[in-house]
Image 1 (spheres, protein in one colour):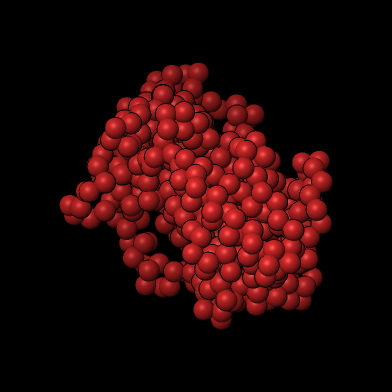
Image 2 (cartoon, helix red, strand yellow; image 1 turned 60 degrees about the vertical axis):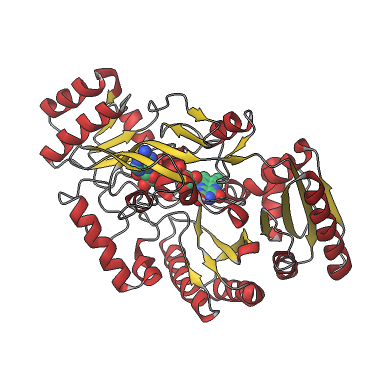
Amino acid sequence: MLDDALIRKLGSIVGRENALTDDRTRAACSSDATRWRSDPDIVLRPRNTDEVAGVLKVAHENGIPVTPRGAGTGLCGGAVPVGGGISLSTERLNAAPALHKEDLYVEVAPGIINHDLQEIVESRGLFYPPDPSSWTRCTIGGNIAECAGGPRSLKYGTTRRYVLGLEIVTPEGEVLFTGARTVKSVAGYDVTRMMVGSEGTLCVITSAVLRLLPLPGARETVSAVFKDLRSAAAAATALAGGGLSPAALEVMDAVCSEAVSAYLGVGLDPGALLLAEFDGMPGQCAENADRAARLLEGEFGVAVRRAVEPGDADKVWRARRAVLPALAALRPSVLIGDVTVPGSKLSAMIEEIMRISSRHGVGAAVFGHAGSGNLHPALLIDDKDADEMARARAAMTELTQAGSSFDGEASAPRGIGLDRQPYFDMEIGQSGYEVMRSIKHYLDPGGIMNPGKMFYED
Ligand SMILES: Cc1cc2nc3c(=O)[nH]c(=O)nc-3n(C[C@H](O)[C@H](O)[C@H](O)COP(=O)(O)OP(=O)(O)OC[C@H]3O[C@@H](n4cnc5c(N)ncnc54)[C@H](O)[C@@H]3O)c2cc1C
């Protein structure tokens, strides 16, 4: 617990009304989208970089844990203040973005919501590709800290590719600018990239320079329903290898479709859904969508739906983006895995997921970015049932290992945090793990930044 003198000192930096110790506010910042919970001692809502730096100086001097917090939509327990101390909310770090249209970049504060930024840049004919399914709620700071991706990462990559520079506050409270405002910045170590995906364990991100692209002239969505996920995945692999350059290629199984239908109150056709988005110059986009439709109808014998108008496409993508909350409504908790395998092994991996989950007696659904061979097995469980929880954890460990037997790898695009901490060294190998832990110790010797996350010990 923080004593009154420290609470007053922190309040003098951010303003007393933004230094909150009441139970309700602390409880609201005790969790994210996972089942993990732990109250901070205090929630601070700084307004600018100087205030963040002031808070970190005090935290550093007094050894107080600091857990940065965006919107709390994280899927790995990253924003959960397991060490108590300060939950540092970026809610008020939300100054209007500075758009540099000619130079194709935008400078943003970390508290801006991803979708709000998308709308701002698109209204000026520009494009910021990273589109996590939580985009109407999650913040850009959280996206950078988790290196978020979304359906469009098949063609455009994840957040990392778009971060040109960062303003960060170090654990000692120093303000540092890393990177540049130009694409060609090559001097020395790439500190910017190291901060992307650092999950609040190395710094607080207080501003970011994000690279933009010209907005594609056209977009078209092609969808089809298959009898099972394996057929949908086979079709996705064929589309991915067909030279059509889809922007997104997603699948979800019949459990997901049914859950989404109930959750959104829409009538999705029963079966596994394949969604493909094409974008680019209007003629080329339409031609690629035509070819995709012909391939799906000809080789896979399914009826294809096409959405050219933005409103129609939005409806289909809304269904895809609702998978997680829809699954979460089925059981008290969802344990999500992440496996990437070569396209030719997708089918076998799907079978393996079903085999492992059924052997452990755990209900499962599968969705994912099939175009890049990336599947999310979602185990549907009651986290208060210790036995079921243990079986789910055992199943997840096997699933994580299974990927490598199919020439693939387990990865964690939604972060390590608390949830995937037990698998982290398995995923990146012992030496990679030690390198990262050394970096953490060097940059944060007091271990105040988001302690208890990623590594077994800080
Ligand atoms: C329904 C749903 C769908 C999702 N879909 C996707 C998806 O498609 N792709 C994907 O990648 N993720 C997805 N996510 C996960 C989540 O939305 C992302 O990880 C997102 O980037 C988190 O942003 P946030 O603002 O909510 O961050 P939070 O959850 O608040 O924090 C996440 C982590 O970032 C750190 N952090 C936050 N802000 C800062 C900062 N300014 N400086 C330093 N560290 C900071 C926190 O300490 C924490 O470790 C989904 C989540 C939900 C609930």
